[in-house]
Image 1 (cartoon, helix red, strand yellow):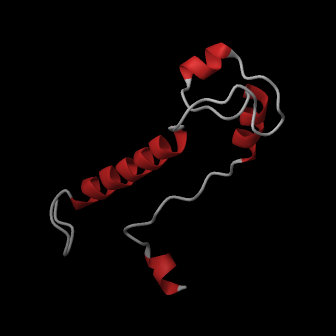
Image 2 (cartoon, rainbow, N blue to C red; image 1 turned 180 degrees about the horizontal axis):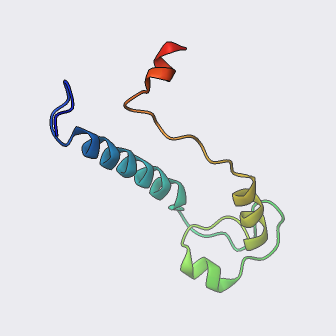
Length: 89
């Protein structure tokens, strides 16, 4: 299929690049580093041993982590292609 100035498959490559960027961002965000704490960094409650073993480097108890996750707002995706409407603004 002809896409004007774009080569064939360019849209698929853009979609794949967007997905790979987001996956890399999520992996970097989810990977705790260092030694696990025995007590939560926010509320000082003890972190269960099973959680520390399952997630090396964990710093928060389950309740505090759930609060932080629910407060997280998803960010908008990257518009690599740009629509005509966005270019008119």
